[in-house]
Amino acid sequence: MELQFHPKSGRGAVRTYSVGPVGERTLLALACILALLALSLLWTVPVALARMRRHEARRDIAREAESARLAAREAEAALLAAKERALDLGDRLNRIAFLYEVPAAVWPRPLDPGRGVIEGNPDRIARGLERYAAALERGRALIEERERADPELPRRTPSLLPLAAGQFEPSALFGPRVSPWTGEQEFFPGVQLSASEGSAVIAPAGGTVVFVGKARPVPRGWLWRLGNVVVLSHGNSGATVYGHLSRVDVRRGQRLERRDRIGAVGRTGWAMAPQLHYELWRFEGTTLRPTDALFAVLDHDLERERVSLERMAATSLPEPVERLPGY
Image (cartoon, rainbow, N blue to C red; front, side, top):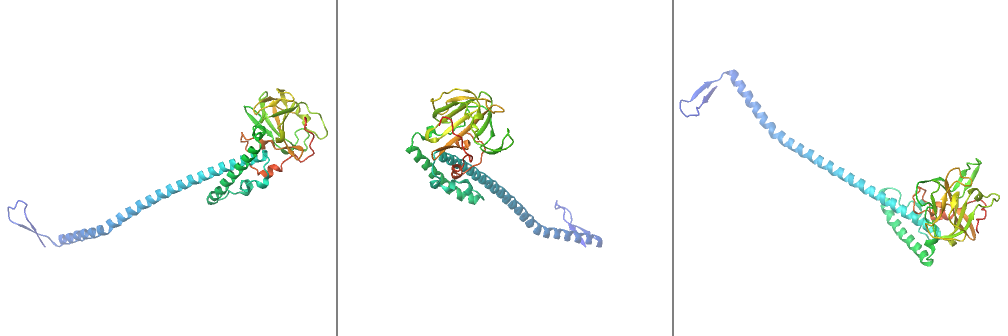
């Protein structure tokens, strides 16, 4: 095999080289390798480019999917927050309706927390919120009707925790319990609030002081255990009782407005530590009976269970009730 070489300068004769059999085979192998390389590039380059495009597409899809998941989580969090706000509003309206004696028969049924109108999966919650919002509006209208019919109702309706400021802790709640004194089962008729001795006790609504002093012991009675007691009448809205007071700053017959001082937290009577014993009495027909005083606390979230208007209306001391001093 001969190879010709042409000098770049153009001068000189063309040179011819002779290649032996081994050189020929080498050149043929090199040519085949170059040809295969060219063919492989024709196939691998498009494949590599396609692979890169697929990888970028998968990365874009992953980013979009993560963005969608984040948006879905944010939307679900917003939905659950709206649900909690709606339930809090419903609970507040239920308690105001109870204090205003709105009949359960006319009260919007979706506001009953036991019905679970806004419980379940996000789709069900979203649909239920529309019904619940309409029920909230209906409940608000019913409450406004009561206030228009009786303009003094908001002033005389207990709605505040009867402690002016400072730290407090509910240490006993309305309902059955084991007596810390006798070890026997009993029904506790109020709420016991542990607080610093001397903390101001205030009126939760306007009213008239009808009793100041120590209650007279009677069979199956408990009021005499409360030491220094004040009873505040709220007219048709019932009465409130304050016990274990270290001092009393009101007199019988005195008119009070909401937040007026009644006295101070103490440990008189059977109190084992400084505390305020607080009771809410409501009319059942012509009879006053204790009910859960926390129904009348609208200014503090005491982490109590949300209950329906119907259940609140049915809550009262089940035992024979002693006569309330001053009545």
